[in-house]
Length: 239
Length: 304
Image (tube, rainbow over all chains, first blue to last red; front, side, top):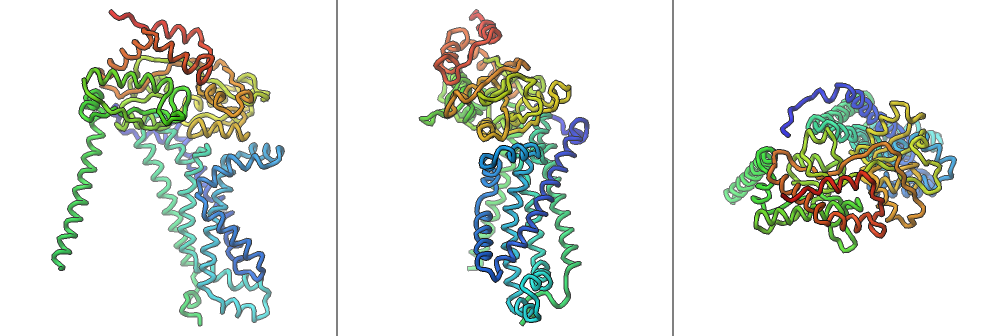
């Protein structure tokens, strides 16, 4: 039973290839979910201050629904139940596409977008109504005002909150293993079971998530520095 | 006042330190104990027999409607617990620890459980890591599909989506069949954390077939809302022995467990258990194969 530590299980064939594949799957899941979540989250967040009452209500309902159900429960619902509600041809299409990663991306994107929408709302509150009114008073339509004045300011304000959501996406992507996606967490278990080198396999998992998180933090701090508008940002400069 | 606060703080820090030290020494003990100590001594010292058991894998191990741990494998393990009590002439607490096919070996290795009673197959790679008791069962990998499914043989699976338990043998089996070209186009293999999730996915149509140990699939079928909706068949891919994994270097514990299993075969209890769980009116009706009958004969060692 006393087993020698042997790090080579992480790269010698056939495991090396499996590790690379699983890490790429984690990156793919996280980045694709993040891209969808960012677009959806910003749109929904901005909609919460829209002049249209129906849009505001819809956006609030969306956020309150997806933000308040545990991610794992949502994932099980999407993976197991959603296909049942779809017509047969669409269902077969989804299965051919790879329903395991697709359901994970869908769930992660919905959940994360609801959280991003909340950050956008807090950003809107921070930037404040005066900017909104000022932009409208120049003759811009509501959409133009959002696009050219309000959104750029809001997004810059919330870069630090977005960074933490971005890191969370990577961590949450590990839940995809429960629906059979062979990503990093799944592989750590698979590797442990096949080689019994649990220490090496689980350490690898930890290292992958840490490197992802640190890279995202670095990237977002660069974004923050690059997007900073001197003198404009910060509540105190606004009346 | 400030002095009292200071003492309080030191006290807190001190107790934290003590707790950390205790935690570390416990951890160290857990790491060395499995290698150094015969499982029988560990049970005697602690007064507890930690049994890794299956919660939802009928007919081998499950929690019944009265909330009791039971099943074919669980009952044999209960007999081993009784034999340990007789050997030690002491009351030993039987502590059930729920395990899955993923957690059973690591939990045995790190000392959380003393033995696992489920549907664990004896494989060469596992035998290098743990010891096995005398095999108590013999089955093969089978496939469950909807009764109306066109899948009737292994070849029909080509291009379909097949679910397997994570940590079982099936994943490697189907990967091998894909690589050798026996299944062309390849099957998509989807691993589930445990059997119920796999059966749920089959029920919702997320996968076309679920594949695992035969009687587990018969157990699923028997427990389904309408058993006639499901069909189980043997693709003839393999045959294997099942036994209880235990920690190595525990020869005294192993001999008690082995002799208990053999006695169960020899005195007719094995047949009674078989009837109860696999017989025509059992939990998961499963026809006795000639190989299984041969195992029952071979493992009934003579008493002298």
